[in-house]
Length: 136
Image (cartoon, rainbow, N blue to C red; front, side):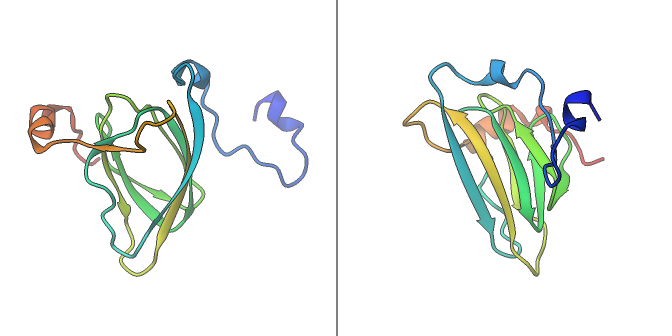
């Protein structure tokens, strides 16, 4: 635990720290807090991109999470995550549970008026398939 976190008051916990995060936020960006609730077995959105970086926290259940260039992994309630946005494709973000809902809350930094996500075409996915990492 770093010295700065040693002084935290009771009930306050730093879950994850991302050094240098401010350099990733686009000039003029707004912060958006977004809650995604997935029904049991919901595969989530198809492969897509986000217009800017996001930092999130799984509040309930389990999320099957895969970013281009990283192996798929299961994030459970209490786990934090980071996505750089921009060119990196968010391959999977579905509910890993077939019998319960899952939920994640993220803060995204993006220019005003940009969509929360943009679905990637099948052609582009094929062109970039070499960037996927097999499950560990």
